Length: 360
Image 1 (cartoon, rainbow, N blue to C red):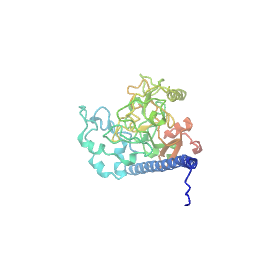
Image 2: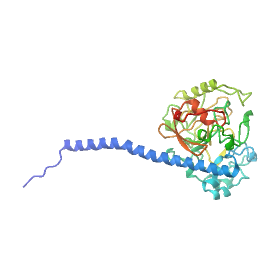
Image 3: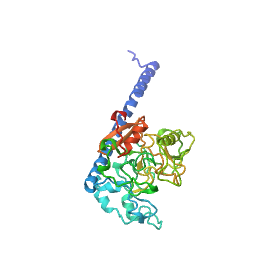
Image 4: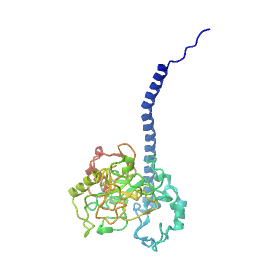
């Protein structure tokens, strides 16, 4: 009888080792392909927002504001409606827009009552267009309220360039006179060279503390208290030079890894609401470059949401940078390594900067 020969242990081990090597080689490629698909979806979402803004512009002759304060000041303590509410009809959400009760608040009227039932109907809905699939967050920071990854350009570093962006408040807080509404005619630097929207990693539900030294995916979800201030408490509307702004930025970016966050739930908190000089809820500014720390000014009264003097850059889980939708509706991938002067110039609409696109 002829004996059948099987595999030896060494042969099996060799085959297993070859399979392991192939998996190790293929897995990064698969992950890169999946991230490329997620990034493409993120880019498409931003293009949809850019198109929605231009449709809004054609009907109203201005860009949607960061918030509706003070025209809705009766809803209480500054919280009002955010820019996504204004864009609902242009995002094929006319029914949601019609269901929104503009005579009521988000968290209650001026008497400080709880959530206004009329607006939880809309506010609890999560719009897919406002989410970047690369984020990976598993829970909304303000649950059950819907959240948002996409944020509007508040402007350059405050107070020297505060409010010089495109999605800015209607009000003129802190003695600053450069706020909205913004029309395309005021974007003198060119709509293709002025930011409109970018993205930010969502905050964390429950407000757990994160640390500056943690992984990017966690550390960038927090807001930290800077170790240097640019605020003059007696003159909040102005006060520091470009050199001082750069010094403040350097302090923010070099925080010790053991520094804990002052807030982790503010980023993208609730998509239907906004506050005039809170940046991280639905805005970003062109102070810190992409994927760097978010820092509140230590002299600001509120350190949870990055006030208008703070550092509130866009953040993402895309390797190497973030997507930015320009005021002309085009979307560009801006590298983390972008020069800060170029980055500041991309954030302002009317400061007369000339930008070479090869620099970003």
